[in-house]
Image (cartoon, rainbow, N blue to C red; front, top):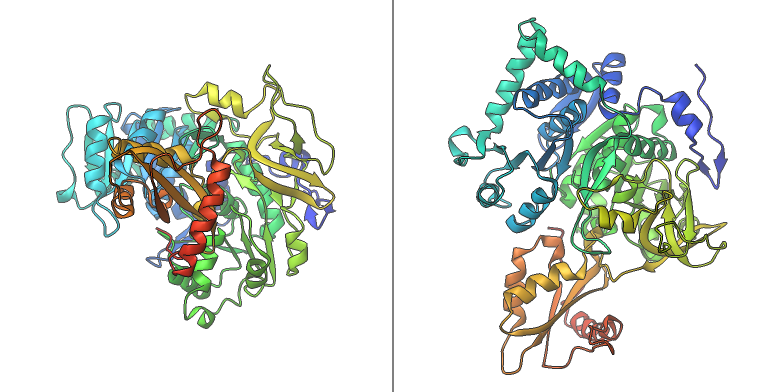
Length: 591
């Protein structure tokens, strides 16, 4: 059957509903994509773990997906149950994810940098039934973290720990703890018994569960890394949203040839790493090169060794690479396209990335949109890229609107070039925040428009982002809402701190660095060092790059006695100038 050739507009292929429905009818549900490629190209490599060198073909991916699905069914997992994880981009993590998709469970990968209270909060929001996590590592002791979580979360039935069997935690009356090794052995034994006919009932059960999945059902929770209305929230994304996003991103990048090789160093807890990069690669049957965690040298090694053709990350990651003394020694000649997202950039940044690949690109995306929503032209001309943040696809329309009406409907559409709220509609819009109808109503209008929380305009040159409708901070490509940090420090220093205020300031490495102001109570003493030490209780990307101690009554207030962040930014700018002069700003590492 001849496929529809998309119209090219602004240098971008226009993806339509008709293309999605007519040309890809069997690829609207994620586990079916794995089954399609396992049937058509069983021995072709699906992904490679750059950390171990292990390769996995499509048949192996499907077999492991099924084996883990059998085990989950045996453990009592049902459609709609939430399965959470604190794991890097391990092969086992991928098998688990697709197994969840196939039985109708909802997969919720957490950021491995979260601390115990943060993990506990995330699990509680979705009432997770199973929790998969690491053990003791060089990075952190996840075993101790899991003990705290398990003792405070009586809804978790199983913890699966990636440790040696003799090093796993002890369970309790509610939660059973098993090793990942035991889990894997049980899964493989069930797979063997199904294939020999000993467990026909289990095979039938999996087939029945898989056949009942609808493309508009939620399958994945990605936590917003801070949001415009509070702490991180669990955004529920559906099969259709992910596959439509993959179709759009893939066509823009040329993945429809089935031969591209994507380097993936973003974490599975991030929509950029999981849906935009990994799922796009999987959708078109291309090859994914996965890294456990981001390290500049390991990423460049992977691009060079595996001859990656497509490569994307947040600006802060590129900055870390370019600052490596031996950066120019890496062979990046295989790259066709390098792209970025998650933060605005300067012309020098664009000029530098133009040296990495024949074509570069960017766009606007977010968790609640299942990934990317706009796409720039793929070019090596900085002027082409800097003219805007790209154009939307017909299948996922964008409009600029006035704020939502009081009755919950979308506000009036703005004229071309007029500033307003950036909004999207269509299949990529997430289903809502889990167990949080109030915030869902504030984000999705009753007529289906997603309010992104960003301000901008749209004209013949595409989308132009002007700022955020709230004072969100974007360090290292992650969204951090000031109260997350402010509330934490206020609690830690409640006897000595009067006011705590966090804001973002331009940073050459992190794009935005967090500046934390702490106003002392009269007669009390607080030092920047002890505040920084206390912030180790937060995830790395939420920690301030600078702490400024203020005397009583020095933090500016509005007439309603609230922190005046506008005036505070002026103070911060002067402080940053001093820090830069001392070599104490524009430094750091991605933790």
